[in-house]
Image (cartoon, rainbow, N blue to C red; front, side, top):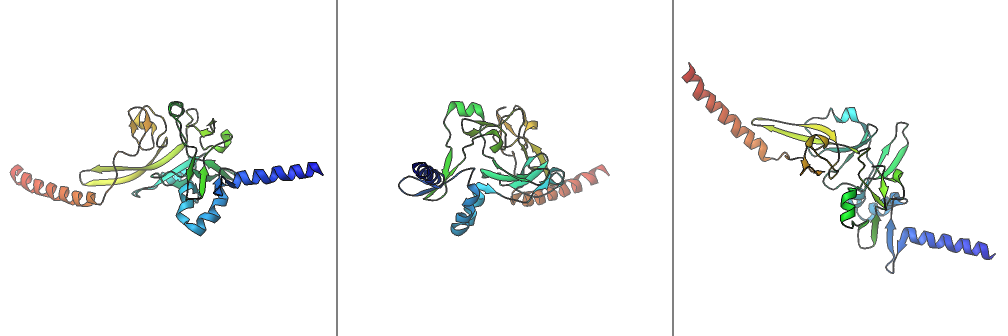
Length: 240
């Protein structure tokens, strides 16, 4: 009887540790139960859940590379299967199916190991006054990078996570956007060509694309076009 009571007590304690802690009954979500956050987020603010967890329709990498002239578009890919993400606020968890269609959950928030040795990074984040989201990993397989060290998902030089984002080209009167794949933002790099953004900052880490489209570009393009027309109207008569 004592053994049964002890087992029941252990289960009760574990359940409390997983779902809440502290005197304020704070709800605690991690890799193991992050999907249950959906229920709470839907009731309070649907935007909260997508900030931390991505569950988007997968698309093959070949289709991603065909996308042209779409703004603010980014994908994380694994084995050429990609899901759309928000590059401006990188979601900490996401789902990517494997080749057989089995859904795999990953912690996508990653840190460079050299940075981790220099300073302590937070392993959790508040999502409301009584909700805490933990990004702590327990094994390599929980990380999108497939590398877990001391509870943190670490960028993996041997097997970099593939990230695809749009690159903006603005050439006088011609401008367009195309998708480029490479290392994710904040992953370590030595040259621009390694990064999806084509922007390796200080030969150290991948930054955001160096140029972004803006509404003023259309106006500037028209001004440049008018300037070109005037220039041609001036030069052609002289040549004749």
